[in-house]
Image 1: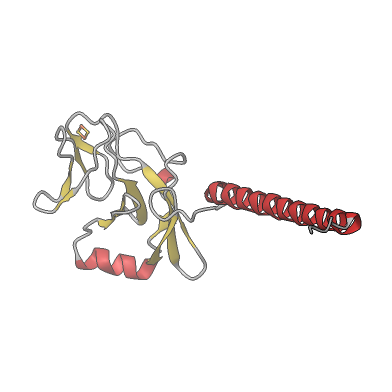
Image 2: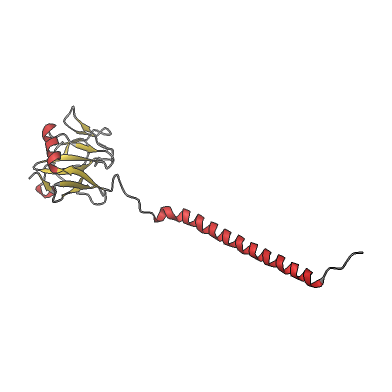
Length: 184
Ligand code: FES
């Protein structure tokens, strides 16, 4: 003979099942929310992170002025290239300066050409003076631009390679007004 279920125990079992289902739903919702927040954070984090600039645009400490001048003296004033930040340190008359190596004609990277003792743009042949980076020949309309340079109390020189803050020049002679770090 089949015994009929006790009405109270059936109701109690249903209640337990409902509570379990609700708990599971709540856990699922919480898990889904945490997952969504995690994904959103992963997407947004790179935009919030401030990256350290290391190449063009950075402030580049190039060392002690005394060491830089010694190197100029030992190499007959050969310009000193900083490839990543796209400039040459040049030994201007009585001063250390930094020339942006972007050609003022159409923007090619200008190399130093030791065999000619001058800068020689490979694109259309513009020539620039090794000490002042003024135009010696070719189609370039003006000297290479200069970056601002500073010297701290300890004698370390820093070049600010912000391309939006250049010293733009005209003429074919070094102008004292462009001097920022003197030899002495
Ligand atoms: S880009 Fe240098 S000469 Fe034309």
